[in-house]
Amino acid sequence: MNNSKKTIKYPKQEKKEKKRINPIIWIISSIVLVVALVGSLLFDQLYKRVILTIDDDKYYMEDLAYYFYGVESAYDYYNQMLGGQYWDMVVDKSTGSTTRDMAMKEAINSSLLTEIMYREAVAQGLSLTEEEKETVKKNVNSMLDEQLSKDVIKKNGFTKEYLTNVMNKTTLASRYRQEIIDSLDIDDKGIKAGIDYDKYRQYDVEYVFLSTEKKGDDGKTVPMEEAEKAAALDKFNGFYEKALKAKDWSDLIPKEEKDIVYRKDSFIESGTTFSDDLKAKIIKMENDTISEVLEDESGYYFVRMINNNSAESYDDAVKESITKAENEGFTKVYNEIAKKYQYKINTKALRRYKMGNITLA
Image (cartoon, rainbow, N blue to C red):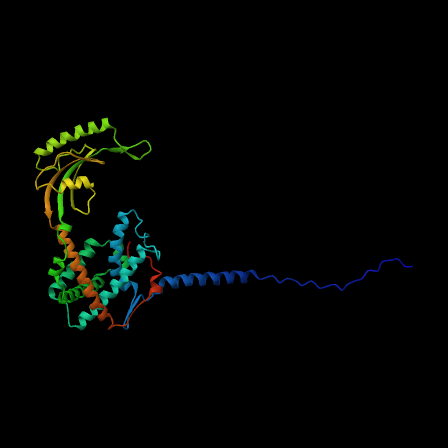
């Protein structure tokens, strides 16, 4: 018996030789990709997108820069006052929209309204008076020489020609708007009669205040100890005696005095920071009288009543109500005017812009 092992030989498979890609091809491909990427970025930056169309006229951001600058400047003022947080504050929790979104809507709507109102004013045969032209000229010179920074002028292309053209539009559009408002049947007297004077009766006072609260070891506000309050009251009474003889309280408190403060205030009964007990005593005061030393949970006061029957808040309320009626009436007329024109806002193009960074420099 043959026990030798038989070896089965399989045919050898030919090894496929891997083709090496020429390095030059890699380099060329990389260059093509980089060029394409840079080209797309440059195209994106240089390509002008239509923001607004009215009939056959196209408006780019450079055409609307003046309107956007006005809105951005106003909002940026509050942004600086609030430490840079204003732009990104949420103004509508249901949608998540921010101040930027609100400002964008205001800017584009302002642009549209002005352009349509200007067109309609011209269609109605209106034109600028010589006096208005002279005012525009002075305002343009003032903006270029005093109000606008060189960076803002350069960034937005605010030339004399550009500003003159856009301010001619805003001036004529504003006059036409006022003519529409003047033609409205608004009952100013009826509006005034419908507002309760007593509700808006204003009290003008000046007062001196000393807090009887202090910071505790944990940083929280706590009341003074009785001994501290007594010492504070004794000090406060000294200024009270001086106030009884002084006509001008604004210089009653020396600059080095840090605890006692002088303030002026105007308030209506439904809106004041004074406590209810303190308010009840103040509103009973006659004009040009000085209260005794008053106390509430926050500190000591003495008050002089300047005017216990000021109409300022009432007049403001009347003016606000009339203005509201005028705006509502104008909006109805404007909506009818706008129907005469074919317009479109390019919301997709607007998304590429960030309010606060468009025209400010």
